[in-house]
Amino acid sequence: MSFLSATVLLVLVINPLGNIPLFLCALKSVDPQRQQRVLLRELLIGLAVLVVFLFTGRYILLVLGVSQSSLGIAGGIILMLIAIKMIFSGSEKIFENTVAGEPFVVPLAIPLIAGPASMTTAILLMARDSSRWLEWLAALVAAWVISSIILLFSHSLSRLLGDRGLTAIERLTGMILTTVAVEMFITGVRRSFFN
Image (cartoon, rainbow, N blue to C red; front, side, top):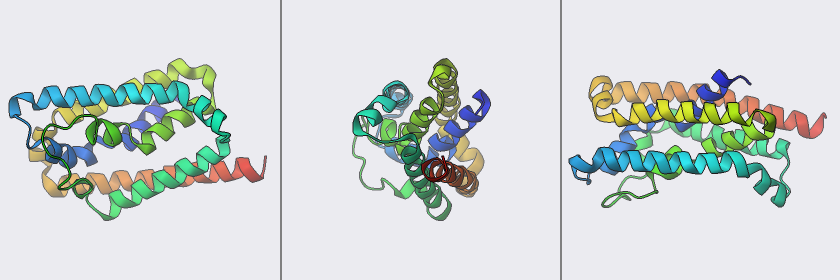
């Protein structure tokens, strides 16, 4: 996997465009003057969690006795479930009526930025080739910057694309993630039974 493909994969699993309605819903009770600061804080917390998982995730898995192939299979299943949800239902309904007041860590930083799919992807990148840790870190930061820019301009993008445009992009992203999930699953199965 190259730096570019790792960055694109991380942007897809973070899914900033698909998460715009959810971020807007979570921030609607926050004072408009504070929204950008709250959003930036949550984005930084999400990045910190992903960096921690990038560097410590494989050791946690080692302690738990989880193999790389099992991680690939589990990652593929999680990614597939997220992709199916993106394709067949709107993401804005995931946390509907659960956010009151100013969000802190949940649900914006975790699980929307640092969710199961992005954490698993970060762990898989490092498990694949730990000697390229600087490249994986750069890909993670690049994906975070792209996602942050999109989410910081979420109000403008929401007005520009409209509900239908956001839904179409979310479903297209879900379709792409489905193929990535199948590839992760097949690779995990191949490593388990044919290596």
